[in-house]
Length: 456
Image (cartoon, rainbow, N blue to C red; front, side, top):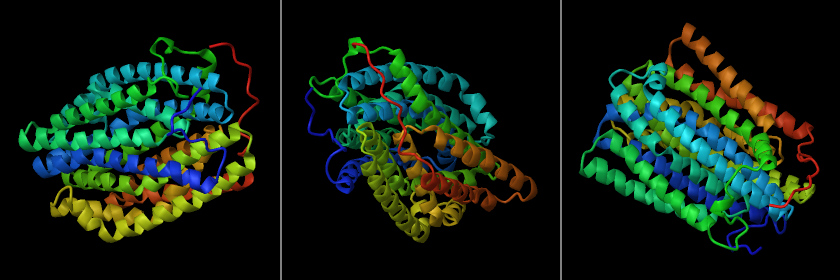
């Protein structure tokens, strides 16, 4: 089976160079993804005002909560694919790809129905302010009408990333991000169509990127070639995808549930606090970029090398990824701390909105190295086939403990700055647990012996 030039075999060559070679396109992709996600808020906040910005912001955590379970579970296929790609077992690579696409189609359709029908109820559960609820419902529903494109884009890019191809997803995301900016400016800025049109622009852009990915996967002769007639569930592959992906899906969802609780607490402080928090979250996404790109790179790198039985090589790459990610995250955190007033004001210049956003930024930004450590070790665990480890840690610390802290502190001290402290406190605790696990456990031995496979 031939491979296109973008495919990266990470089991041979200099580990540092390979990780960086994979991570740079992912970094650029995530940069444009964050721009993609921020444009709605940036344009809405400047053209439609703080109420519309609050409406978009109030939907963010809820959208992520519903989408992240399915996309997180689909990440299990990436682990499975990278494992078999490293072992040069292309027959299983093909079976995993087609099973994952079938899984994504089913999940995307289910998510569309749930998101559209449950919108008003979910937003009310979150305590969304009455003055922004109508616009939140409109934005949320329009977004979920096109959520299948979002799910399938993540499925397709996960397949390509698993075999080391991070360049093609980068190119497609750059195109769709530019398209989203143009459509947002056109719909909101020129035609004045309102907050729902921002969600429509996002949906169209997501569909464009998904179609570009699909066109690449349909090309003949590549290791990740997709054949529509072969899209179906294969029991053995589905079990592996669920085994490695379901913990990640649960992990993403429980973090989102905790963030929904945070959002609900923020909502109780009014529209300005909602808008300020939403502006901070958009800017914070840029600080996560080194965390995300190295976590993804290490998942693929560890998966391929352990699939090939190269344990020492896997450990060498893990050390490099950890140090690099932590250093970059903290550098960005310092810059964010210094320039947060100017950055928050990009979204809305209302003094109260800026005040709330800056207060949040300066509470948490110097602790970004802890966030980076937790995510990078989680990525290593996923690549090693131990996705249940980060699931348990995130469930207990980032969900249960975070919710318990916020519930308690809001009962006794109803001040917003104590809500902000929920993040660095839980990042610190999870980092200590991850450090102990990384140093004491035998995480290198993540896979059982590969079973025999029947003909495709």
